[in-house]
Length: 164
Image 1: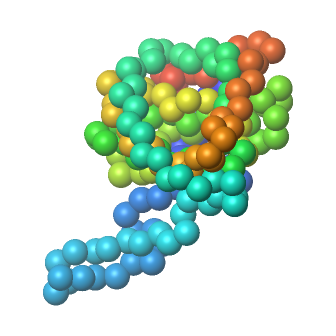
Image 2 (image 1 turned 135 degrees about the vertical axis):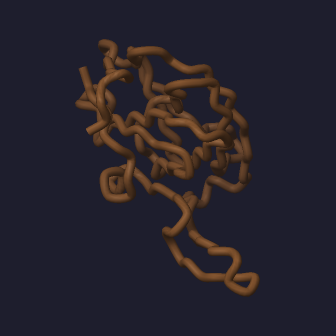
């Protein structure tokens, strides 16, 4: 069983990026009343990925544990998930191939996560309550944007234990 760790820019760096207020290029605007955090070039892609797509996911809470049975990846584009509610969520990735060991992270309010192109991951998981997410990725004209892999055995992730 895998216990998730806290999602931070440092812990997630091998797999993608964490975006949150105060990271990136930060400056004050509107006479100092607003702190603007900008992250240019945040959604990597290759030359085949030409259509920017905005999708919305409304994700039901999962329960005490996740039994992951499938992984996916997007070979041509990074994928961004932004929670649209104050909620914790689970991010699961495989450092190499999904027949190897998985890593799990818990993200929270004010954090967005980006999977690098080609990173194997599980679909986004709501932890405590129904959570809407916005997602951005680049799509190809041919539609070969997502690859799926059936895991040889379920990867079990504890959603009730403490986050390390």
